[in-house]
Length: 193
Ligand SMILES: Nc1ncnc2c1ncn2[C@@H]1O[C@H](COP(=O)(O)OP(=O)(O)OP(=O)(O)O)[C@@H](O)[C@H]1O
Ligand SMILES: [Mg+2]
Image 1 (cartoon, rainbow, N blue to C red):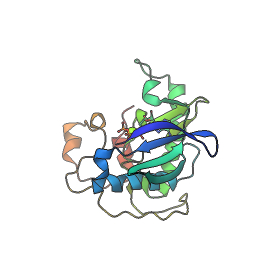
Image 2: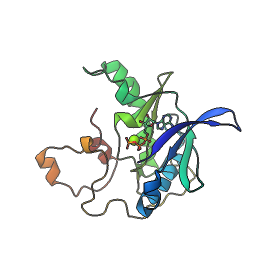
Image 3: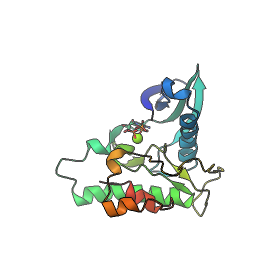
Image 4: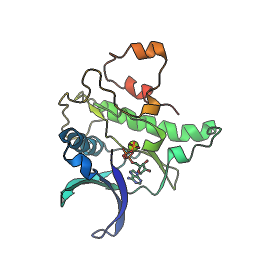
């Protein structure tokens, strides 16, 4: 949905990542709403395996989310053609599952879980990114942070398909049952790695 730049924070003398809403999408109120929701969802979660959001702002008509710069590679670039060794996969999957559990406890379903939305930093730490399709159910349980999250119910209109096409292939039987309510189980449907 956005373009991500590596930037330098000249005040704090550190790198940052800036996710910019492309100009052709600024005029689309739905895209803008999702962009704000992405920043809100990720910034409501304080977890070592979730990217830290610094701010959402606009400069000369360009909307951007400023976040920590993760010095590493997206997981899709790290998975060898013949697959990852089990211990290596678990070393990444377990903290990501913990991050998702934290999100679910706060009433947030990521819904776009895929290797390119997980960065692995130089220390081998996994960080979950891209809450651009996150669904905020408002069911806050233990693990929620102080931010107030509300779902305005506009996310999944009847028949709306969201997410990554490659992750949407499903067996014919599964395809027929499309009226599954959004819940933490939705993450399983969006994961193919
Ligand atoms: N905080 C960050 N630090 C370093 N790199 C990042 C960061 N955020 C995003 N990236 C890089 O930019 C890529 C795209 O980011 P992101 O998934 O947020 O954007 P997107 O436009 O929603 O992409 P897609 O539609 O492919 O999911 C990531 O796969 C990663 O390589
Ligand atoms: Mg992404």
